[in-house]
Each structure stands twice: as C-alpha cells, then as structure tokens.
Length: 145
Image (cartoon, rainbow, N blue to C red; front, side, top):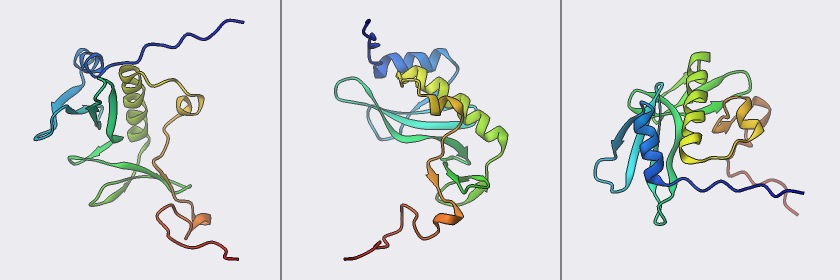
C-alpha cells in the first residue's frame, strides 16, 4: 500500500502571488495589518496572515452586493444573497460566479478538493420551511426531562 503524500501548506505570500498573477483585485484592509480583501467575478473574501505565515479566512467567500460580501442562504426552494441591509434572490449567474471564485480561491490557499464542494455552490445557511423555529439562530429549548 502506498501512503498519500501530503501537499505542502500554502503560505499567505504564495497565495498573494497567485491572486496577483490571476487577475484578482487585491487590496489591503484599511487600518488592519496582514489582512487583504480579494475580489473577482463579482465575489469577494477577506483573508489574514496567521502567525506561522499561513492563511485564515476573516470573512467567508461570498457574492458582492454593493460593497458588502453577502452570505448565501438556502431556503429549499430558492437561494438568496443576504447582507446586513438586504436580501435578494440569487440567480444562476451569481451561483456560477461564486463557484468559479471558490475554485480559484481554494487553489490559491491550498484547500483540499472535497466531492460535495466540487458538485456546486454550498450555502452558508440552510433555512427550510419544515425547520421553521429550529434555525441555528433559534434559542428554543427542545425537550426537558
């Protein structure tokens, strides 16, 4: 049996070089050291340099709505883009762009390929009608003995 070889971890600097050479918009976060905003295809994320030189997400990747990075909400029948100000229906174009952005981002930061992620866009929140009242934000107590 052969052992799988572990790929070397990507560094913040190697990811930054990838972004710049692959037409991503890269900007430092104003007033915050070692933190960058990455944008492409109408999507964005915020990354930071870890103490060991690695990469950590500050803001999950999402579609840009105005100047804000929206989270993707799945309501079962439709996906929505939610910001602090509004919620709009996500179109197929939005989802295709987000998927393409995620794939390039994963390559840059060294995220492993997972089967379920390769199938399509994964939502940040799932709020189906049948779960009404049982959303993650809910503080309801279920069953007491």
